[in-house]
Amino acid sequence: MSAAEPGWFFCTAGRGLEPFLAREVRARLGATEVDCVSGKVFFRAAAGPGKLRQLRSGERLFLLLKKHSPLPVSGNRGKMLHEIKSLVIEDPKYWLDIISVWRKLHGHDGKTDDGSIENALALKRKSEEETNTASKRQKTEQVRAIVSEECQVGAGETCEAPARISRQECWAESRTCSELPSRGSGEDPAANEELGFSFRVSCRCSGAIARILTSQEVGRALGTALVKQCGWRADLRDPDLEIFVHLNDIHSVVGIPLFRLPLANREYIRTAGLRSTVAWAMASLAEIRAGALVLDPMCGLGTILLEAAKEWPEAWYWGADISDSQLEGADGNIRAAGLVDKIELLKVSVTALPLPSESFDSVISDIPFGKKFKTMSDAQLLPDLLQEMERVLRVGGTLVLLLSQELHRRVDGLTRSAGGGPAEAPAQAMDGLTRCAGGDPAEASDSRAAPSVDGNSSSLAQRGGEAILSRHFGSLLPEGVYAVSLGKTDAFIHKYRKVSGTGSSRTGTWSCPSTGTFPGTGSSLALG
Amino acid sequence: MKLLTHNLLSSHVPGLRPGGGFPLRIELGRPSELPPEPSPGYEADEEFLRRLHHVLLEVEVLEGSLQCPDSGRRFPISRGVPNLLLSEDEA
Image (cartoon, rainbow over all chains, first blue to last red; front, side, top):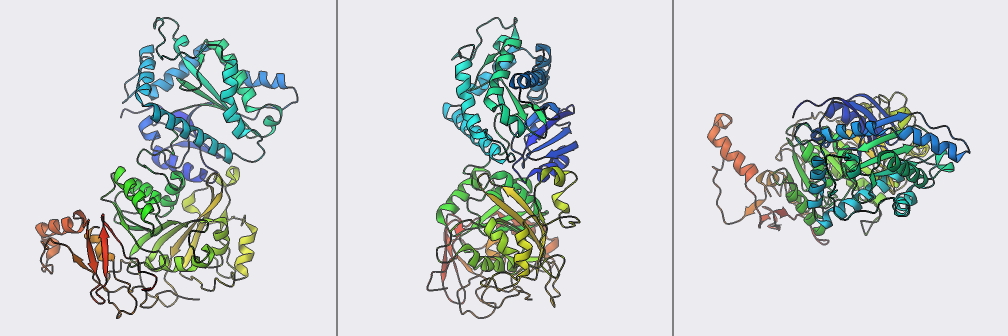
């Protein structure tokens, strides 16, 4: 791929994943001037669309057009609308430049685009070739992705979800040109390139601005102004160009999405389980090295293993589950992703793993939420799960778990703290503004000033856990807790490292079956 | 199921002798193509290593069973996935 010119981008991220994304853009794209705020990471990088598309912890990627301080809020709606328009609207030349930059980015395999209308039509024709169901699915996924993003953007917004849906409605009323069913402009391509161009404004207002103006009002005003200014055609369903405007208390941002589908949509995952961005983030914490053995003992549809095996293919992966339907789904996913060589499946129970002790380098798992286990509650089973996971992990190995809020509180009482004495797992809340700048998930263990956000967790731990949680896992050293949003609920990623228990002289070598211990023949847990 | 996976699995039928339940006997029609023990200096034997790699990582058991050498309990392999769940009364 030919060297790309540096450009400014921003990428939205689910709440809590901003530090992971910041780290990823630096590592994968060599990004500089990385700036993260709640829900977004801004950066500068010289990377082509192929590389950009590989980002795994972000939601949607945009070309950054403008980033200004928040708009001053006054009661005067007209004045505010005027200011918003002057922020966004530029003369047609500006937009043509932007379009040519955007096209260059999409100018397949580095071929420079001459910006001709043929290319725009070719792009449109290509998208038409997708079947109706495919584009419908994309649309639904886009809406789903956007709606789920909107759920995550801070507190204080009042009109997110309705705005998204009603924006389409409001465009239906105010469209100045009727939508042409055929995509071809039918006009002289050489003259007035703008006329053949269609666009859509997607606007998000939150914070103080949202109290004066709704997202749809702003979107409508901007759309009308753009039509007047540039003579473009509004198209909600399949525009050539989408213009995103985010106005909140932190900044005013204008951008163009680079790809039709969100980054979180993986072409290699057939049936989605856990959100792929969270799964990737968990795998990134596990420190998977070449030749590592990685286990997900409650793999479900295998999302974590798929993300890990795609990113770190020089390792070996095992997934276990007790459900036939889940294993079937996982098998389908593994085949569809072409990862049959990398990921093996087992029908075994995590409470009694028929695997040798200290044989895996990493155990990564999404502990199922809710009443998955019929006989006991999750909290009661948690010690059994932890015991087996700890047992099969080699000394020095990593354990990465995704826990619900309830399990998160309980698990603090089970594991030894880094500082000894009263347990105080470093909980890093994703208060993006302060936490992100320079914050790197890999450095979570040296948490100098990491105040426990969930004030309950320390006090719970000090009480020594609850009556049913009587066992204590001295060999699991907490190395970080990350609050992440799963859309409707919040969850917590916990990372542990297995250290040798008191009195044990085992080193971190791979223990072969003949010397390890098996379940039922005596536990190798170090207690107390 | 790859042979590498088989190397990690053991029977956890309750009441076995310590260290028992391993290795599980693979039951299928094909005889092994490898010698029962690696000859001394096998690390340098390129040909052997190739065959070993092939058998360990490139051969998949799709249908068959794994038998516990001590209890005789059979664990089925179906569509490449071994099932080592014990029933309620066994566990």
